[in-house]
Amino acid sequence: MKWSVLAAMALFISYPALAQPLTAVLPEPLLAADVPAGKIVPDVLRCLRDRNTTLVSAHRGGWGPGYPENAIETLAHTLSRGPLIIEIDIRRTADGVLVVLHDDTLERTTTGTGAVSELMMEEISNLQLVDAEGTVTDFRVPLLSEVLEWARGRALLQLDVKSSVPVEEVVAAVAEHDAIGYSAVVSYTLEDALRAAAANPRVALSIEITDRERLEALIAAGVAPGRIMAWSGVHPAPVPDIWAMLREADIPVAFGALWYIDTAVSDTGDASIYSEIADGGVAVIATDLHWTAYDTLATRQDTLAAYRACLSP
Image (cartoon, rainbow, N blue to C red):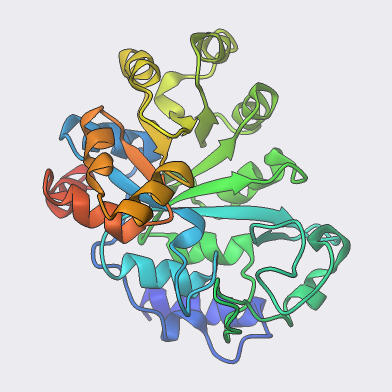
């Protein structure tokens, strides 16, 4: 029996609210992310950077009409067109279950109400996800464990750990589901980054680094630069000084085009800024306009060829 069938059965058993096994109906990636043994996400990003190739990060899974934020169906739909890195958000229910959901409350993205942290998983599993246009879909709030299982051999993940969630629990879930090779745990404070680093010496870390003091503090604390991908923040314009500092440390850099730059691109129709950011040596561009950025970058790079080469054993 093929792995995809086994995974489908496992998801169906663990999530009884679903009408049918997820992977029985999901598309496969155009180019699957099967990370070579012993490698982690920053290794792949360094390889891509050295091939002058920038990955797009699909914010909240690459949502769009009919595809709500953070749904497994949305992740699969996104990757069916091309290779991106997938960013998702982690919350924790009242009974300690890690789920994939952005907001601390349910109203905006589901048919439910109330705080995620005050509801049991059984209650949340009965809700339906709502897309950005307010359309109710048949999709459900996924467990982090389900996404980690689905993503094996398919996707590179950035796990954005929300402030109310103990980062150690997310690190433990990554290790438990043998997802170390394809998952990076996101943290924004030095304290959380050091806690994540201490929780498991192998798990990749996506850490906000916008100054030399933060970088030096991480290295002084014993965090190996090889396990870090740096988040250089969300800015209205490129920040080449930060990127150069991180390149000097051989740390792959992600930059947020969210809000400011994405809005300007939407208003003007000029997407050339994404190529300008990539030309600055950035390994990942996080954006809500993921296909606009992806298609723009196609004029400067062969993403498929580089991705395939960097995932070769």
